[in-house]
Image (cartoon, rainbow, N blue to C red; front, side):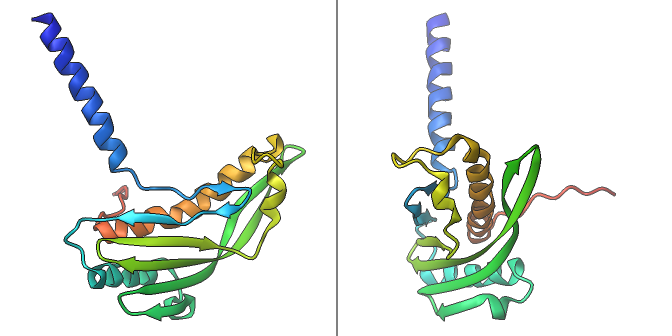
Length: 173
């Protein structure tokens, strides 16, 4: 009986881990070659038109001036937005954090039940954060982490908007 309970517990924990990993939002990763595009997959019932409408809603909710943020708008196929992220990444020097802003573009290619999100920036200061072999220079590990965290906030927010998940807020009343 103990063996059955142990096997059942092991099976549930393994399948639970696999299920939770499958549901995780993909993340942008900065490498010495830049940031590779990420594909967000959704329910097979979502059409490109529905995804397009949710992307437009996300733009309206995310940007103060959404019409100015949109660079390209091809209905049901492509939306490209641009903006400036304040305090996007930091460099720690002499026990002090120096924060930098980042001008960026997000290109969202839309297809049935999925979209590809491409991050772009003309700022290439991040190239010095890497050794020739592709590993991160030790003093820039935190810098790379803050950069990735900042750009992944957009990806997570977009993914949640399309899936219809609401942002959890704490009610202080």
